[in-house]
Length: 219
Image 1 (cartoon, rainbow, N blue to C red):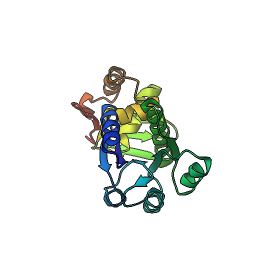
Image 2 (image 1 turned 90 degrees about the horizontal axis):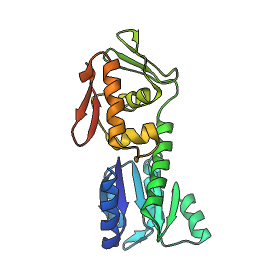
Image 3 (image 1 turned 120 degrees about the horizontal axis):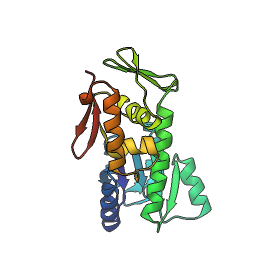
Image 4 (image 1 turned 135 degrees about the horizontal axis):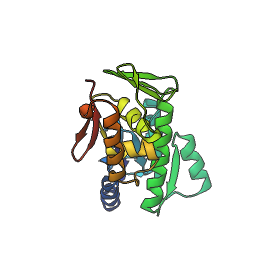
């Protein structure tokens, strides 16, 4: 999960970056409007409106025009109702007023990313990864044509991995998909992954990438 943090106050930016990284997010910092618009694509933008070289609202509009699916949270000292309304109309998904707690910001980030995940997954989607076939609508899994009796959590973990077959999915991304929070704990995830491996016939099909997450292998 990649976050673009647009904040010109170096002290605030450093503090927020440290806290976000502790929660497993990859963070790119941008201190100006120009840097924000030149940054690579991301999953979510935390956007201050007071920037030294431009209007944060215009940055919000341009980012939204480029990518209708990116999540944008305005993080600013402007707390008047008219400011909130203007920010949301400019394309922001949420609006947080400084000062704020990191716990509140984390909860808002999780809520937005949950909604983004749900919108991105068609209910009728069927994914095949080697001999593993996943039917999202029916919530069923077969391996070489034989049903795999997965629990609800095991299915959700496999579904999270199968959206990017062969790619490493961070543990916190999986926890957000499955438990709707990153506070569930890695041990809980490890236990469910171990059980999932046994039911997929070939334990190595779900590969652990130490310190990062897991990967679903096609063979």
